[in-house]
Image (cartoon, rainbow, N blue to C red; front, side, top):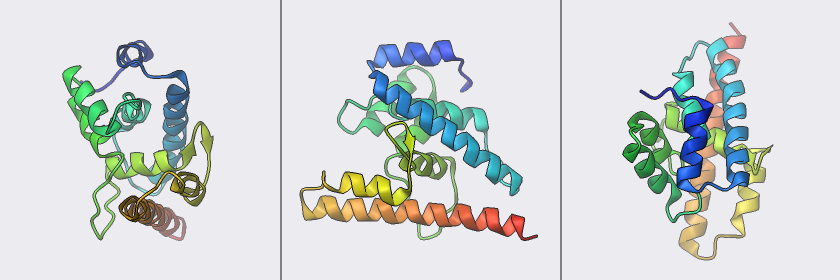
Length: 167
């Protein structure tokens, strides 16, 4: 079962050694994602909100580890939360399909890219802040691909919301 209460989530933070600033980031991502899901629901798209909220609250649970998305997913699987683990595994590098499908992983990826620390920012601001960490041409290429994916998801969300509001 993927539904968790705050006590279980806090216990997972403790077991994983998740720093407090990372917990605040995940909470801000979950709050932003909730607002986004409200807009998508009004436009006729529905998601398992409890599942996505849990995924947002745990997407960086192993942030201090190398390849934190995989490490977090592996940790959550060991704890018995496989559905959440599947979303967490993909939140850092979503599918690079030409067509955006607005999967749960896309939604979490986008919400994560709209929150820097615990502040909501634009996608461009978030990626501008992280570009200086890219020290090789390969890293810059990956950075640019992830930015493009975030902007494509944003455009797909915008299209769904505006299409519904124009009806």
